[in-house]
Image 1 (cartoon, rainbow, N blue to C red):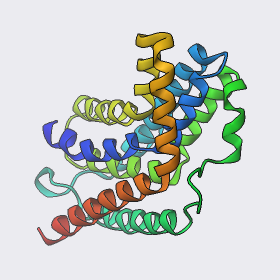
Image 2: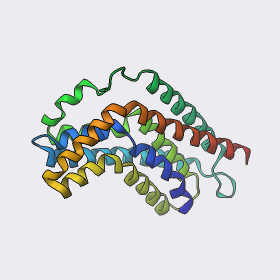
Image 3: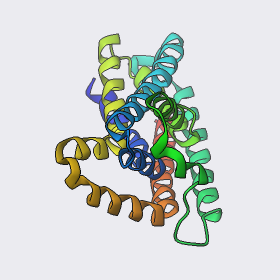
Image 4: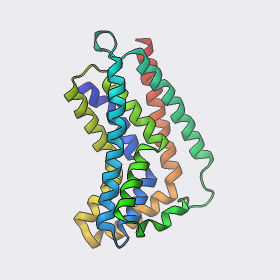
Length: 223
């Protein structure tokens, strides 16, 4: 189980460091329905990661581990392909960054008036359908399945990945619940900083994760 958890830790951090979902949940928390929309968004986010991870675990687990319980070669090829795609996504993110200091999608302006149901759906969509998160979740689940760990250990490793991946949007929710009205200023500063540096933060995260996936793939294929 330790090997599986170790494999997913950096991937979970890569999912957690997603600027736009953090900004989205901060905007929701600042609305009149913040106390319901913020947790609803977080619940959707966690569910999206869990569903995608579980599906990939089931598919990858059916293919079986490699010799002596080591990851099969196809896992390394998947990591290599995903690593290249992540690096290309990093390049695209940087090249298409806004020329001003804002850089937030227009649809975010209405988030503070959304219902809890819409917030839940948005959280699930941003975690499960977002290309970056989808690739990282696939990589994490494939790595878990191919360690040869027991089903219970795989479930624990996936849970660790989901929890870590939820730290980004989860932190503002916790701050709001703990600090109440005092959290408004802190969350506003966080939103402003992420809005200005969204592209830079995301590009750095993608570069690091992409390089790691390629490195792991090369190491696995040369073993």
